[in-house]
Image (cartoon, rainbow, N blue to C red; front, side, top):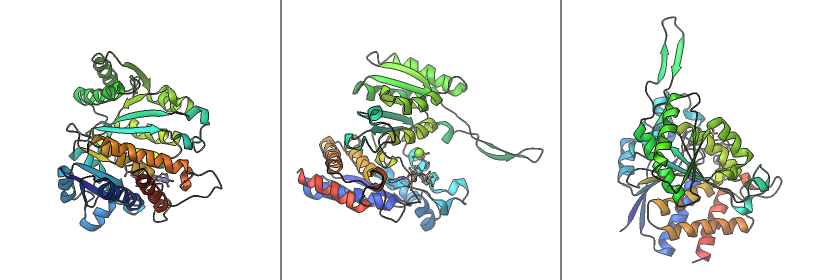
Length: 361
Ligand SMILES: NC(=O)c1ccc[n+]([C@@H]2O[C@H](COP(=O)([O-])OP(=O)(O)OC[C@H]3O[C@@H](n4cnc5c(N)ncnc54)[C@H](O)[C@@H]3O)[C@@H](O)[C@H]2O)c1
Ligand SMILES: CC(C)[C@H](C(=O)O)[C@@H](O)C(=O)O
Ligand SMILES: [Mg+2]
């Protein structure tokens, strides 16, 4: 049966990197017989400009009926003066909550060809393969009460609330253990249980859930230590499971271990296996429109889509092999090129991956 993919380019470099992913999907359709159809819709600042809201009803409705969603990135300085409820980022958060995408998988894998691109010593990162499992629809991003209020003395007070129910913690921990069972069987739960009651509960629930996975080992780490350990000795980690905000921060740090934030894909899954796929980076306004963005995180997000939502693991393997082949040939966008070395643009990198895919057919 033909699968429906909703394409949401978004803002900044979003349309540039998504265009390369669309080329890749077209190649899989025409040359490899992948049965997909794509439709494009607006989200983020582009949607606000066109329709007055970062997540138009029509976009959410299309997302709900799609087999998978591919998103570029949202946001940019143009929309920063808007109230929070209308900012591009709210469009993304609305998709995550509207689709119930509670499990965000962010794999930090070092392609061996990029060991020199990392800011860390090659021996620290060689062979790196971490899966960060980030809770995505709860925590401080969605907790109530929130807002800015004016106190009796006239001073304003801003507040956001870190809130997790036991069931929210339990389901994300189960995802982490189930992934760990298919890899190194080690889960590190990252919290701030020494200070925050909410994450004291997180630790308790993670420990209880671990009892159902006796073949896996659970460890706990405070988030500040985890940030330090990620740059000191990242290979100690197999699967990390953590809250929405800690996962946001730790995954950007982990991205640099792989050479660039332009290398890290992600999958956001709901209980039915439906998913949204996006690079973990943002709209990179500083390089937008310059054909300078690295499209590989987006192309690798397409591979995750094929694996997790479309039941096409062979095509996913093909994309990952094509990316590897292109890196082997020495092709580099600026973010992963050695200082002073020549670099290719977004389009040339995307074309090279498509060519490598075809060549392997
Ligand atoms: N998922 C998303 O849509 C998402 C994620 C993060 C940030 N944002 C939004 O993006 C905007 C910019 O945020 P930011 O600057 O903090 O983060 P960013 O990830 O957009 O950029 C951080 C730095 O990384 C570089 N970079 C990012 N992606 C790259 C790529 N593919 N290739 C090469 N270099 C790349 C940028 O040029 C910049 O120097 C903000 O509006 C923010 O809210 C959106
Ligand atoms: C843009 C923003 C809402 C988003 C987040 O904080 O989750 C981004 O940083 C990410 O990592 O996907
Ligand atoms: Mg982030």
